[in-house]
Image (cartoon, rainbow, N blue to C red; front, side):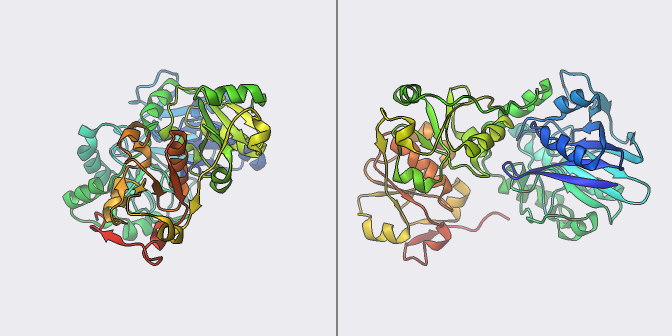
Length: 454
């Protein structure tokens, strides 16, 4: 048995191609299935089975499209309310994939109908745990409904215990979530690999002997998650089509200028340093990187027209990333010189500073705006800072204090997005592009409020 890991760091997830040298099973594929197909070609194997651990909340699956493209059996929990043909599978059922035995284990918690898969070839065993048992933690339990969270957390506690009892201690563990995904919860370890035996001694879901204590602590640690999650499971139940990855023809200068003037969403993919220095008035900064699609999907209205502005490579990557969360075929203006892209449009800029710049330039009447999550703000904050989390900023623009704003987050990335949104709204902003952990040593007065839960 060989397991090929297909990373999606942009969403903090992994998919897997598991094969015996001839035929393969794919577990939890992302919507851009060309990556999986390339891995199968490189390994010289045929994809005969595709399996889902659950209806995903953080991305659109490629499972339905991949199974159709290859005539593969599509293994989906018989209890999932899907609108497409699949090979229903239930708890305890075993499916043969070439030389591999694939056993489904019901592991409710992340969702009510979550499955894990134990795969063995007679000599070695691997556990594919989806959003159940992660490295150091478990999948979050609040994505189904608020009223179900406590019950699902109890289920999660029981499920991981059942899973490790069913699996061999030496089995390698391959979760889908837990690599930066908002689908994980608790103190995820950040490890790149692990085994069932390691998790039995290191995972709080397995080492905490008090179930009620575990439930209280996990629920207390749940934080905000992207708003687009509400649409993913519903779309996955319909069976998403393949990703649309083609980059559209670049807009001409007049059309880009018209969109800016009309107040449409024009997203600049360049580094936040370049954006602060000079950008098209009315555009917003979502620097391309691993957090790009998460925050764009979280903040901007999904139903409104979207135009990407940046280098060809960044636009290509952004189109791929956005397809994974259901934003298909955005328009684009390819180029990195704002003036050349729209000579008719007004150019804009705002100051970008470090903590030393805050000390030197901030007056008592100015506001420090902290756009971190509420739980981050609660642990430690700049004295007197106002907290409006980035994901709440657009609907709460009226709550932003008047006057000059000094905007910060934990690293500068979220603050760059926030500064651009505020500048677009006509506010006087300073982007603090610095790590919050360095604020105190730089001489910024902090309020230490409380320790993090757990």
